[in-house]
Length: 511
Image (cartoon, rainbow, N blue to C red):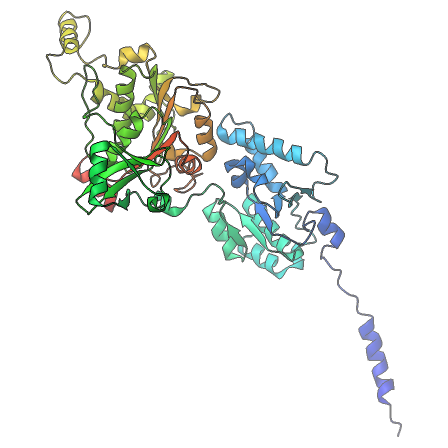
C-alpha cells in the first residue's frame, strides 16, 4: 500500500487556489482622489462642503471659514449657472460668487488642488464621479439604495460629502440652509450645519421686554425732575447705546429712559400726540409705542429698527411720525415701501399699469395713509370743498384720496422695494415695512442707499416670514439690528402689546 504524504496531496489544491483571478479594484487611487479634489491640501482643519443656497445667501461666505478647508462641488456651479441671468438679488449674488471664485482661482494651476484663503485655510472644487468610486464605500452604497436618483443635484452634493469623508481624516461638514437637505444628510450619517455667520442670538428675537434697572427713590425723583441720570457702567447691565430701559424703584414706580452717547439715561422727549394737518392725530397708546415715537422723532438717530407682532401698531406709528416730520419741514418727503413677497398661493399676473399691479402689495400702506390723512370732521375745509365739487359734478366725494396731491408732488412715495437698487435717497423719511422678508444682502442694499439727512425705519415681525430663503434669526431686519446696534445713529424698539383689537391680540398670542 502506498501512502501519499500530506505535502503531495496538498500541492494541486494550492496551485488551483493561486490561479483564481482577483477582482479588479474600483477604489480611487490617491492621484485620482487628488484630481477630483477629494483630499484636502493638508489634514488640519475641517472640510466644509457648501450648498448652493449658502453661496446665494451670502456671496462673501468664501472668506468666513478661517483656517478650514472650503469645498465647492462642481454641481453647485451648475446650479449657480441657472440663476446668473436673473435680474434679481439672487441673480446678482450668483454673479458675485462667480466673480469671487474666478478671482480666487486666477493664479491656481488646478482648481481641485486648492488655493489658500486669507484665514489660512483653502478653497477647492470637488468633482463627484460615481464610476469607480461608489463601490469603494459601504456608506455610499447604502446612500444610493436610499436615494437612487443620482442625477438630482442635492443627492450628488450629499454623495460628494460622503466621498470626502472617505478620503480625509479631518471632519467633513455639509453647510446648507435647506432644512430638507439637512434631514437627508443626518439620515445617512453626514455631519451638517446651518450657515451661522449672519444668525443672531435666539434671545434677541424672543425677548421683547424692556430691560429693567433698579434705582433708589432719590435717583428716580432726580431723573423725573431733571430728565437725566448718570450711572456707573457696572450698573447699566451691558445696556448698549440708544437702548430703551425702565428705571424702577418697584414694579409700580418706573420711568422709561434711553441711554445716550455720553452714558447718561435720558427721559423720553415726545409730544402728546403726532398731529397731521387736516388729518387725524395719533397718540401713543402704550409704553412701547412711546419709545418708538421717541426714536422716530430723534434727529440724532438715522436708523430705527422695530420688532412687533401683528396689531402692535408699528406701521401706523411709523407713518404717522413720518408725516409729522415731513409737515414739520424736517424732511423733504416720505417714502414707504415693502418687499414683494406673497403669503401662500398667488393669483397669477395682475392686469393694468405698474401702479395697478403693485397696489395689492402696497395696500396696507395706503390704508394707513388714508386713516391718518382723512379729515376727521365734515366741517374741515378740505371736506367741504370736496362735497361742493361733488355737488357740481366735477368730482365724486371720496374718489380722490387726501394723500393723492402729495403723491403727485412726490412728497409721499409709495413703491415696491424691487426698484430701489441704484438709487441715492437724500433728506427723506424712509419707512420699510415687512423688513423681516429681506435677506441680509437685500437689507444691506437698502441701508447703503440712504444719503445724508435721511432716516431709515425698518419694521417687521421676525416670527412672521414667508420668504423661503431666511428665517427668524437670519433675515435682513434682525441682521441689520444685530450688526449696527450700539452705533450712535442706530436705535431699536420692540413692541409687545397689541392695540388692533382683543381678537387680533389673542390671535397673535395663541394661534
